[in-house]
Length: 496
Image (tube, rainbow, N blue to C red):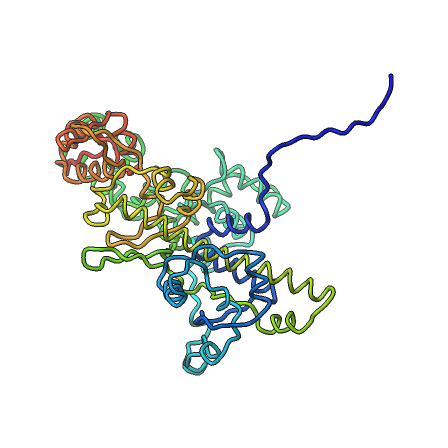
């Protein structure tokens, strides 16, 4: 057995993602607010980047500009109003005017962002601008402080309140009293029995909102009926034994079992329907989510104008101080550091421009495919897939997918996520396709206009959709109905 060294030559292809390409891909899929945060972080980490107003192009004789253009040829500029103005001054050139990014802030940009603002004396105090809604736990804890409780009872009550879920129910396990008793025993250092916990629980259940700390829906409704002094035989019988029939609206079965008239059952059901099955939601701490559109589509005459929302997005430029340092003969590690940060800053600016340009092109393509939607509404939404837009703008499907993630557009029909415009197709009776979102809208309209005492079954909805030239299976109607949060026909029936 012998060992020997050999040299071999192998040819292979490998895809290598440079840091700059990774940065461009990352910026592409960021939402508008995430983009602002990312730019702020880069400004803090890169001393060569600074905020400044976009400048008009002027001739600059600097070696820095030439060096940057050699290292990173700029892409096509985004098609928004501000960039088109710069393009016009370059006689229609598609390249970004990188000179404006390096330009010394002169008189035109020195006072950017320095508009007159009201003095601090005229502004409301910071404390007055803060708001915070009261949570369920805080509300009940405040009420416990007004109760006459022993230290042990207060500790047990605190454990009960700490185990409430967002709906206001006691959410421990199948045996909440034993679990609370075990926790109280550990905290108090003495044995706590379930009857003692039960007594404190009854006290907590008398607090506002009515029905809080119940262990199930039946107990929650009974507490409210008892407080409102409406816990008669019929109401009590329905809550304790016929919640399933109440859900199915099987009032005849309830009347037979309780041996009362149907009118008595209906009167009791009307009262129960006004009770709150989720008392905790009145103090829900879920804050509303506000959406700032990334793109605006305005109708001007018979045409549409696309405007990118750049409000709040910092306008980046290269610091004049470091540019002078590089031109002034910086050497050694100082020059290497400045060049590295300079290259990083230029790539960030380039990636932001590329992101804006790509978003514009994608929205422009969507507008072309979904023109009927913009003109006439959801009912005229067309089937559309990522590949259609990708082929139209000459990009990969993954790029279009990243662009449409977490991006919202303001249209004459409302605010929509860009992914909303991509729908599968449902066959029409006479051929062709209609978008699935249009079918969902039609199902919603049918259910809203159905007779209350005889709601349409899924099969009946299928037949009505065929009248509107939509060929769809019953199971697909059921799936879309559940997605829309519409109950089955048996639970939509209105008796009174």
